[in-house]
Image 1 (cartoon, rainbow, N blue to C red):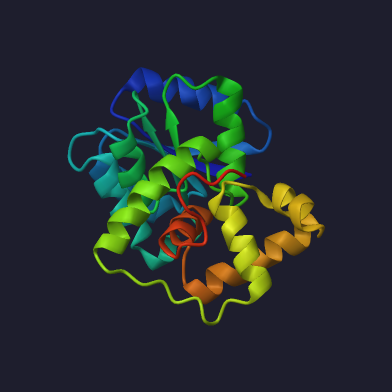
Image 2: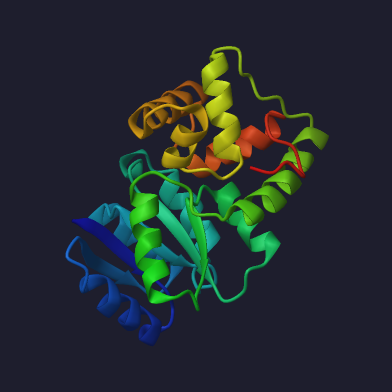
Amino acid sequence: MIRILLADDQTLIRAGFRALLDAEPDMEVVSEAGTGREAVRLAARDKPDVILMDIRMPDDDGLTATRRILADPTLSGTRIIILTTFELDEYIAEAVRAGAAGFLVKDTEPTELIRAVRVVHDGDALLSPSVTRRIMAQMASQSRAAGKVIPLEQVTEREREVLALVGEGLNNAEIAERLFITPLTAKTHVSRIMTKLMVRDRSQLVVLAYESGLVRPGWSS
């Protein structure tokens, strides 16, 4: 079962999400929070696999709560999807900086919400390639302006190829097809890269791919 925490200050939205997700045979909503502070407390208590986190809530907003949750070493397996009403670049960028694995607008189709939970639970990032390139390019430019250097000495040539494709927004199956390897091999490469670069999830790899220059603005997949 994929154990889910819902964090939104609107009771009706939480009820709708709960009804939708609990109807899936492999999903269970284990708790609900109406504030950011409550989301942090319940995450520590229930250790959910996935959190659907509203970006705007009282008593710590969703981004603050996300940072606090992902800083907790006991929650290293938890993945967070940020929810908001508008698809604004600054929200997406801040969500990724905070460590979120994905980003969804609240009017997403029910099937897309269900798919999103499964995608981030499986370790993939939840950003479309077009959004990924636009936002990550912006973030990488800011990092380079600040003089940030990404050390890739311990990453092999093949792993650099995989990292670049992750940066383009490709999933494991698409990477496997591009490099003529199996999806399992692609997944293994991604896991090793994450270990070497000490990042917790795929969205952070996307950021590093841009910051390191392996992927540049305007590149197409």
